[in-house]
Length: 429
Image 1 (cartoon, rainbow, N blue to C red):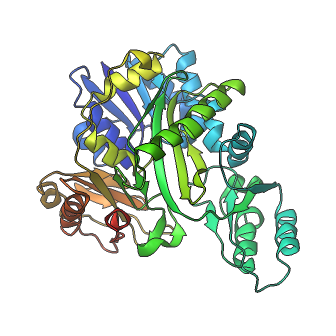
Image 2 (image 1 turned 90 degrees about the vertical axis):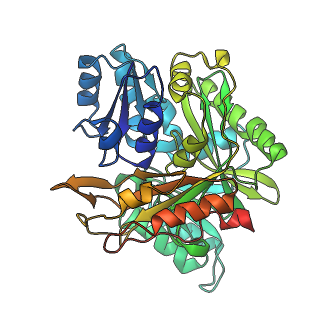
C-alpha cells in the first residue's frame, strides 16, 4: 500500500513515522514535508493547500490512502476533491471541517446540541463588540474575565485571554479592527473565561463508531506557568491524570457522541479525528473548541504509545468499518513532547539558522525527535518555522519521560532556540 500524508509539521512527521512501521505500507510520501520526514519518507514539493496538485499526485501515483494533517486543506475541501476522484482519504469533508473552520458555527452547534460550553456572544465588527464590552463593564478598572476569539483559522493564535477592559478592547481591535489574523477576524466571539485545567480528548470516527484515544494535556501559552500569548502548542503529555475513567466516560457521553449526532443532523456527517479541547471546571468538563484533525503536539506523544497498526485504524475509518476493528493496544508507559521554538515565536522570527545536536539527541533512550518547522540548506538542517522540533520521549513514569525529553532537548542547539521548561509539571503536582 502507498500512503500520502499531507502537511509539514511535527504531527505529519509522527504520522509518516508511524505509518512507515506498518507491514502493509510499502511507501510513504509527505507533501510538502520537512527535513525530518525526508529521513523516513519521500517528500513531495506540493503545498498542503494546493488541492488540484495533491489530487493529481495521488491519482498518478496510485495512492491507496491519503491522510490530511492540517486544518487548512480540510477546510478548503481536499477530502471532497480526493473522494470525487475515487480515492480513499482519511479526514472530514469541507462541510464537516467547519467545526474547526468557524468558531461561530462550532459554538452555535454546541448550544443547539446542549453540549456544555462557555456562555458567548458573536459579533460581525469591532464597533459592536467594543460597545458590548463598554456597556457590560462600565468602569475602565473593571475586571473583564473574557476570551476573545477570531471566528476563522488563525494557527492557534486567534484566541486572546483577557483580564481587564483594556485587554478586551485591544483584543477586539487586533482581531476585527486591524485584522491581525486576516479574514479569520470577519466575525468574532466574546465568551466567558472558564477556570480549570485544560485537557485534550481525541477520537477517531467514521461517522457511526467512535474510538476515543487516551486523554492528553497540551500547553498553549508560550511561557512557563501558562503565561504569555497563546501558541499552536508548546508541548503535551499523555495520558493525563486529571482525566480519570469516570471523567473520560462523561466526556464521551456528554461531548463526543452528541457532537457526532449533531453533525449528522446538520447534514454534515463527520469522519476523521474529532478533537475536543476541554476545560475541566468545577461544574464539569466544558468544550473550549473542536479541532477536526490530530492535534499538534498531542499527536506525537499519542503515537509514541500506540502499539496497534495505525494504517489499519485509518483505513477502517475511511471505509466506514471502525466497528470491525479490534480494540486499540497502547504502551502502558506515559509519553511527553517538548516543543522547541524559534526566537520570537509566536511573533515574527528569523529562518535559516543551522540546527546542531540532532544525532546526539536521537541517541537518548526512548526519544524520538519529530521535525516541524525545518528544512535542509546546503546539507544543514535549519529552522523554517516558529515551532521547530517536537522532542518526544516515553518512560515508566511521567517524571522519567520528562527527564529523557529534556536530556535530549539540551543536546540540540541553534541561535535563539527556546522551549517551556515545565511540560507535564501539572501532572506531577
